[in-house]
Length: 331
Image 1 (tube, one colour):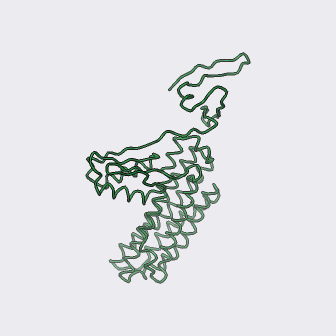
Image 2 (tube, helix red, strand yellow):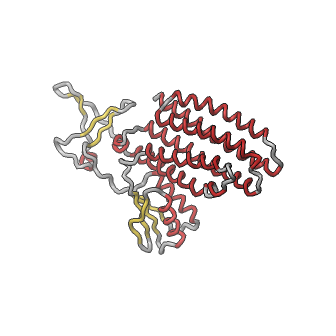
Image 3 (tube, rainbow, N blue to C red):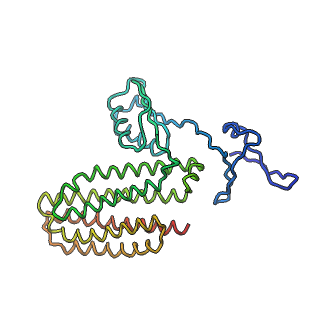
């Protein structure tokens, strides 16, 4: 923290001097202009009019003594979400096959990351996305569409026991996770760079709301996968008929609730959000009542109970999104 005293000019204007090291690091000279912006909390943000290219941000991971590929992979994901522009894996010895495989798997999963340099002892990956063009709102809209398709396919699969429609749900849910990683990454990038945050027309409060909704959607995807697994189990045992009718009816109502909760969020519509909360409470009770009335045998009961639990959680997550919508509207 650099504390400076306020001075008063002859014209009675208030002024402070700028740190010399800061000005020189940005290439600022006499008569250059800077932007001065009052922040929501009363702070003053001083930034150059022309954006200066940020220094290289490289996170280096020493893999010399790493024995577990999963541990190394989690470090790659952590560095990605933290917002580092480049990640370098290096070793005192030639990189092991497990390290190379982990990097390849990571670049195929993480959005925007590509290998840019590689030799026997190091691999450098870099983020190629222009985060001033693709903000978290666009990513969130895409994520909501992916989750909508997952939920819709699960409930529609009960018509005619369409196993093929839901047997690859885990792979499709991974795409939801990929976008969630990207939103988490963008959240950290914008927090570190107020200029970039301003360029996309956002602020820290909005970024916090985006990441909160992203987490809810990611959990929705997980419960949809769990629901599909139990449905497939019943289909494989030819016991899905006992729960089909109830699931289809509930599925239609869940889809309506989901669509309205997302619409309310995107429009910051408190009235729609309030309707979703009230409708969600009614639907949760209906799900409990519907599955209690089902005539199922002891083998079907466990899967039916898990299906009911996942359906309830999806409805409750829609309510969570609507509560976040009301919070955002009260900004």
